[in-house]
Length: 160
Image (spheres, helix red, strand yellow):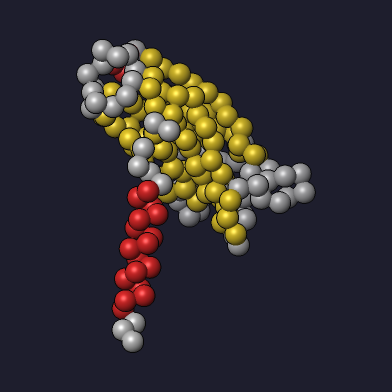
């Protein structure tokens, strides 16, 4: 029996499922946090220009992955959303619950890695904007100068 055939079939199935999950996505990007931790003065930036064919309103989902060295139940994030062509700047503070009061992680995952998704306010451009530029900046709002346990942050802009 050819050993490569099951491996090839598994890779094709994995490719199908990963692309099927993001078919309505207009933007997908991740930012990895340094292994030593997330410094209090480190800002994560996501920015891009989307064409005029992009709907004037998109949903925004932020996903973050933490490991079991994260020392708190919650994570405060300060998120600044800029749409320069519309002269819009919006700042939100969001509390993400990562574990219950007993210390059980609430995100999806197993072992030492868990993922939590948060719906952000929709992004809305003027219908007349020919290019839909955006910049989203994120900093943590915890008191630690170096915050351990956050692995990465992912932003997805989508229509569904």
